[in-house]
Amino acid sequence: MNYKHNLIIYQNITPLHVGCGQAVGVVDLPVIRERSTGYPYIPGSGIRGCLRDIAEEADADKSSAKTLFGPESDSNEENKHAGCMAIHDARLLFYPVRSDNHIFLWIICPAVLRRFNRDLDAFLPGSNLKIDVSATNAVNAEQYIGTAATGLLHLEEFALQHGDDTIAEKLAEFAKKFIGYFDGSPERLVLVSDRNFYHFVNYATMLVQHNTLTSAKTVKNGALFSIESMPPETVFYGMISGTRERENYKSGMKKEQVVARFKEKVFKNKKNLTLHLGGKESIGHGLTQMTWTA
Image (cartoon, rainbow, N blue to C red; front, side, top):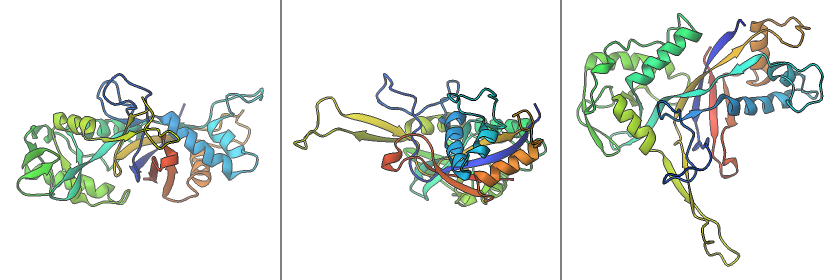
């Protein structure tokens, strides 16, 4: 099937909890992570459900939602079909870390850069958002690369030395390309080693303890539990893909028209869309800004 692809940037406004259920570790309700890398991500199925809700509100008869996302699985319609839009998982791009130099900085690592380039080659060949990663492996566990500082840089409990300025210039150029897609400045982006990046995204998340109170306003026995969330300012990226109409091709909409319909009904033809993703919406979690980069 032939698709038209668009890159979407996701930026957390409030903490994001996309859970994987209960766990046997020290965190009762951890966030979902990729099995191979340990990086947190947002499953495309959850994003798709939120976008479908928005599309259903666009038309009284829910016709746009049916065309874009297909009929509901429990509907009684005989002519069931897949939707025209494919919503891919949102992958981690920039992770915010506390720094006494700048309050917080975004970090990225060579492994994430290589994967980002590979995804662009697969979905958007020829994109100008790629960065030359040939020299990024030069950063070691005791270094950082970026324009955030010129000497010692503190990230959480780590004290890192400044690395290669040549790579720093390329990184700044990469950051400037994204600066129009989310709120921030290029100087806040620094490159760290794959090992340090893994440490931060696994051990520098938000952990909040919750409990249940009895009618006497005392803590109920066994009701204390912890919730892990991704901090505000975390930035993900993902693809949204559209193909021709699948419903017997009755209106003859091509992939470009399908994507245009999606942008009209869901994004309201605007660049940004704010919605709730993940759980704990009732306590303000999951508020996220999606940005259309095309």
